[in-house]
Structures are given as structure tokens and as C-alpha cells.
Image (cartoon, rainbow, N blue to C red; front, side):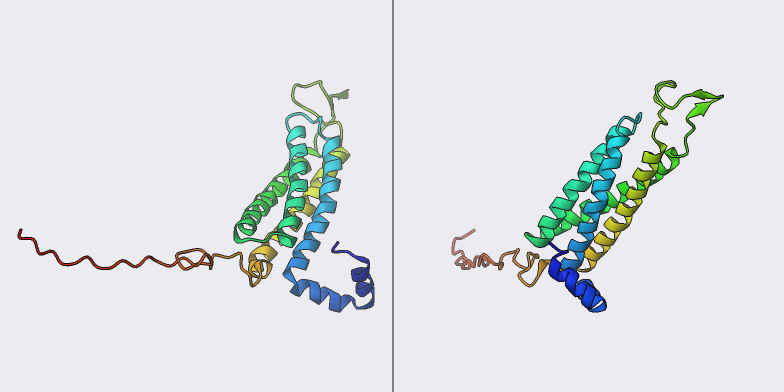
Amino acid sequence: FFFTAKNLTLLAAQPQTLKMDVLNDTPRLLSSILGLTCLTSFAFFVSACVTASTANAGFSTLLTSFLYVAFCVGGLHTVTRSPTAVSVGFLIGVSTMLCIMSLQEAIFWGQLAGCDATLLGADISKNVIAQYTCSAKSAYRSVCAFAVFNFLLTGAFTGALVRGKDDVLGDGGGGYDDVGPTGAQGFAPQQYDKPPPSTADL
């Protein structure tokens, strides 16, 4: 929805103007970043399916790909449909953790791509040494590459969301101005009359 035909036409006609409009419009910028994240997350998912049989780490990477998809769907819903102070704060936390996970995935699979598939001329790529797999080095590199893309995109998304969270929340707030004794619910502190002075002899 953020790459509509109208936007593509404007981009072709006035690329610099549209670029500045997107950069100055925080919700559109966040939606565009999430759109790119969806594309790289799908590619990461395909690569993760290929590496799912890798010993010790295949399933965790497949699970991470599902988390990417959930993040894209939840992020788009939060930014475009229901931005509240709680949901935006939660989204900042989730995107920060996914950014860290993406860096971990990139480092792990980048190093694993340098594994040895042979030992003394014998094939040890799969099920020869216990808990050792080196049968899809190209897929390992692919997972590493898309993890790097997701690391950069989620980092950019987190920074843009932290910087422009007030723009996402809008004038209506969803902030904390309506919380408290004189908030939007119209409650005010209860006023009590002072008790009469005691006349009893002590």
C-alpha cells in the first residue's frame, strides 16, 4: 500500500520531492522500511527453510524467520492502524531485540559458511561427525546476507520510530496526558470537608 501506482508515478516524475516527503512523514517512512523488511524477511524465510536441517541451529533460524514475519505484520498494524503509547513502546522493544538477533544470525551463519565439508579427502558434510553439518554453504551465505539486511533495516526502523514516536502517536495522543486524576475520564481528586474540631475532654 505504500508503493502504490500513484507513488511510483510521483517517484518517476519528482524523485527528490517524493523522497523528502517520505523522510519528513514518519509514518510513511516507517511503513516503507517495514515494506522492505517484509521482502528481505521472505527471502530470509526461504533460505532458512533450506538450512532447517542444519545441526544445532537450523530450527532456531527458521523460528527467527517466523518472528520477522510477525514483526512485519504487527509493525504495519501498529504504525498504520492502532498507534498507542503502549503499542509503540512495545514495538520499539521488539524491533530492538530483532535487530540484535539479526546481528547474531549474520555472524553465526557467516562463520558457518566457512566450514569444511571434507576431512582428509572424506565427505563429512552431513551425519558423519555427530552434530556437525556443512552441506549447504551457499544457503548459509544467503542467510547471512539477508540477516545483515534485516539488521540494517530494523536498526533504521528502531531509530526512526524512537525519533518520531510523537508523530506516530499524533495529536490525539495515545500518550500519557490522559492518565491521572484529571485525565480524559474527567475524574478529579475528591474534596473532603475538614472534620469539626473535637470538644471532648481528654
